[in-house]
Length: 474
Image (cartoon, rainbow, N blue to C red; front, side, top):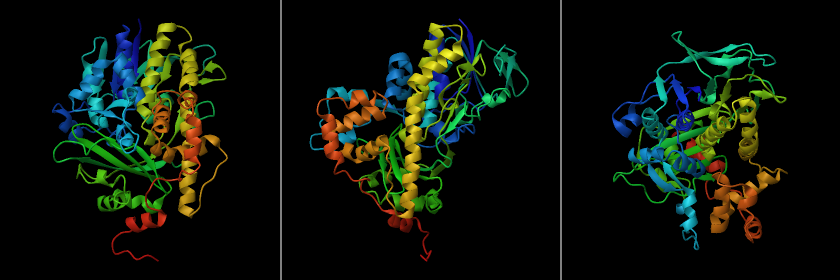
C-alpha cells in the first residue's frame, strides 16, 4: 500500500482520504485553515472561518447521487452528519405534493439526501476522518509548492511530495490536490494549467449568489422544501434545507448585472424575495446573519494529460481542483465524491500509469457532465443578458431547448418530474430516465404549452424592488 498526501481537507479531500484509508493506504491530509471550534454545530456556524473557501457560508446541498455513495461506502459519515443535526431530506417530495397525482412512491427514496450547511457538513466529515485508522490530519499548515524529480518525457517531472509554509518537506508516493477552486498545480512551474490542454472556461463573468439563511422559532422547517431551483426573468431562486431546523434561500443573478447588486442589502433582498409567490414563505423565517454575497465563481476544467501523455506523474487533482461547476445545481461536492471513488478504483486496478488511467476514467464518466453544465451556463448567461435588454433568448441547441421546456413542465407532471430529477441529481443518464414508455410523448405535450419561466416578477418589477427608497426613477 502507498502513502498518499492530500492537499485540502474539504468534503472531497476528506472523502478521498477515508476511501483510500479503508483500502489500507496510509493517508496524510494537510489544510491551511484552522480546525473547527469544539462547541458543536452552533459554534461551527458562528465561529469557524475558512478563508481558503470563498463560498463556505453560502448555500450548499448534497445531491442524492453523492449521498448514495456516502451511504454505501462510508455510512458512518451519514450518521455523523445526522448526529450534528443534519436533516434527512427528499429532494422532490415537497414538489410532488403540489401535484394532484403527486403521491409518493417507494422508489422515491432514491431522491433522498442529508441536508446540512457547509460548515456543519464539513465538521461532521472531519470528525469521522479524525478517528479513521490510517489518516493523519494536519490543519493550519499551508502547502506552498510541490517537489518533483525529473522524469523522461514528462514536462512536470514526477511529484514526490510538497513543501509546507514553514519549510517542512513531506514525501509521498502520490499527491492528491483537493484544494478547491484555487487549485494548486501552478505550484509546479513546469505544469501548465492555462493552455488549451489544461483549462477550459465556460463563461467569463459567472453568476452572483445572494444567500439568506433562516431558522424557524420552533426549530422545525416550514414543511417539505419545494423544487430546489426555479428560473425567472433575470434571476434564479434556490431553496435548500440545512441542519438543525435551518434553511437558505438564494437569489442568483448574472455577474454582469450591476442593477441587481443591491440584493446584498437585507431589506432589498427581502423585498425582492417576496415577489416570488410560490417561494416567498421560505423568506419569512428568522434570519441568521446578513445576506451572504458571493461572485467570481467561474466554470473551469483542468487536465494534467495532453495528447495522451501526462504533463506530470505522481499527482492527480480531484473535486473543484479538477473542475468547477456553477453552484446552482448543487453538484460540486457530489462530483468530487464520485471522482474520489474513481481514484480509489484506479489505485485498486493499477500501480503504473496512474495519471493516465485516472484521467481516462474521469474523461469518460465525469467530463461529459461538466461539459453539459458549462454549456448550460453559457446559455443561461445569454438568456439573462437578453432579459436585461427586454428580449427573448433563442438558441438552436436542442439540449438547451429541452432544459427550457423541462424547467416548468417538470412542475406539472409527476412522471416527468421524477425523470428530470434522476438526470439533474446524477442518478442516471437522460436516455435511461426519459426512455420509459410514453414519457417522451408526455414531455412533448407539456413542453408545447410550458411557459419559459415559473411565476415571478419581470425585469421592471425587479428593478423597482431593488431601487433604494427615495431614489427617483429617471
